[in-house]
Image (tube, rainbow, N blue to C red; front, side, top):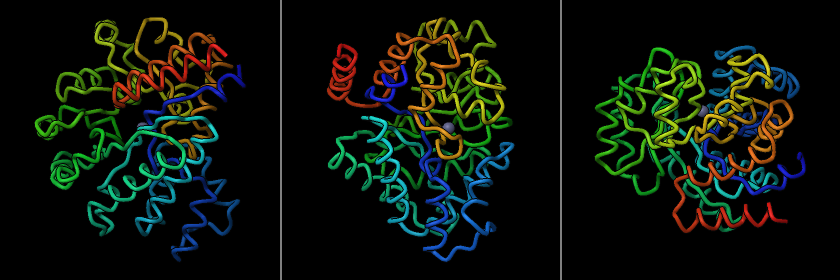
Length: 333
Ligand SMILES: [Zn+2]
């Protein structure tokens, strides 16, 4: 099973770009850019990556953004992730990012856009990996900032796959951003949102009713609302589940308690993703293996979710067919 998962062609739909920055890379970038960090050695930094709560995680994530000082730096972070994709046989990936952090640091809006756009072009040329990126509004900064971010993003709408909603969930339901996401839809851009990881099922309803999402990041707490489960089964809105993230953020005490088997059983359109693999100690392959080893999900379940990830992606129909064919051929072998 482990080997089967390792070699299986995969699609990733939920991964934040700076969340792939390993301690070693952060350390190197800090030194290259003469950015002083509070850790005296790489081992100290690595130890701090083993955080105990959400605040510590966010602090470390933000430190990763602060050591990035040029488009080239961010491009390099992306390319390191793509090398990992090659190792893990990730064939298509849709990456979350935000422009606000770097705009607040004084960089122009196209800083993130240019770096990720260039990286995706090179990933396809070099490795045949397809995909794209999805800027997210940082929800705890509020709707006014989201409006400003949207104005900055609109000139680049042809370069992005979708616009999302991420960061601190509780207290910031999608309904707060209703008018901004109406403009996103009016511009012909797809909408996604983190909902129902830390906050309750209401937030998933809000993502559906108030901002009309094409896909939900996490969504695990939908199980608390039977009507919502029925709606999600009927509409087959994809839910991008991130097992290591859920355990690291203490949504579940350990992997064996994860609700993914129940979600799959109910017919929800779930698939497995890594969220912030460097911080949560596992990339896509490790997440899948851990679910297979610690829950009742078997090979058929893993395959079903691999198909769900392909179908739930924003790839073209032609690319989806290619990815499906590759997966089917692999299973046959
Ligand atoms: Zn996420």
